[in-house]
Amino acid sequence: MRKWTSRTYASAGWACLLWIGWGFVGIQYYWPVRYWGLERASHRADPLISALERFTKEQGRPPAKLSELLPRYIREIPTTGLPAYPTFKYERLPGRQSLAFWDLGSRNGLPMRGLWVYPDGKPEHAIMALTLSERGEVLDARMDRMPEQVLDVAFDQAKWKSGVERMRMVRLFAKTHSLKGRTLGELKKILGEPAGTRCLVDASWEIRIDCPMGILNWDTFYYWPTQRYPKQSHGGGVVRVGKWAYVHE
Image (tube, rainbow, N blue to C red; front, side, top):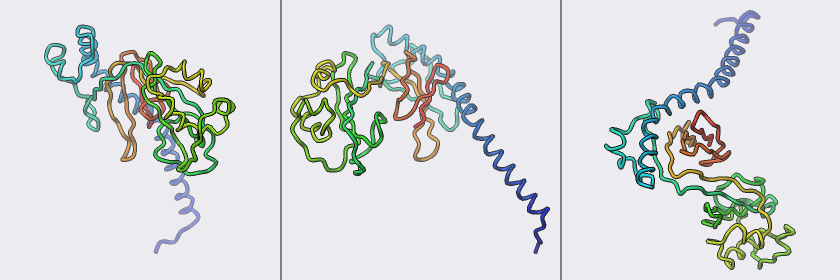
């Protein structure tokens, strides 16, 4: 059996330090290399993007699917050139949409009901989130990060504006005030200013490369013809990479 000497321990120590050091170097250079590879792949979509723009201009709408482009606007749909993510995905979008949310107060440590959908506001607080059309009309309303059990009470505008019992009032308020179709301006008169607003969608179509990193990860790399990307999109934070955007899910 080999005897460990002071020189052996020193060598092992240096090996560990080198291994840790290379690990840090790898982490430091991983993301720039990943972005560079995806940006190179994005250039292969340039003919596809041009075809989509010509189709949209001539037809007055984006195509429902990429096959509508063939063969008049493009001879074939390009691939990404990336073995792990070979396909460009296409989706027709609803145009400009935004989100407005109101803080409903703290859950005070109570467990959350359902899935966490929106990152907006304080994590320990519930929110009411409204999806708005380009004209500012409510398309969808969601009570997010609510506790499992809440005793509902009738809506009281004075209490709401003072921030009292919002969590208990919000569901009956939504039922009695028919939120869908109302404008943000109308709701501001009733509820006061929202805690925040942000862009959700700002394009009529999207090209993307789904590039997950593991089983429980849904990173994606996408392009909008407006090239106006929000700070949050597709469930994660957005990093601009050339003309495209990378989402860290």
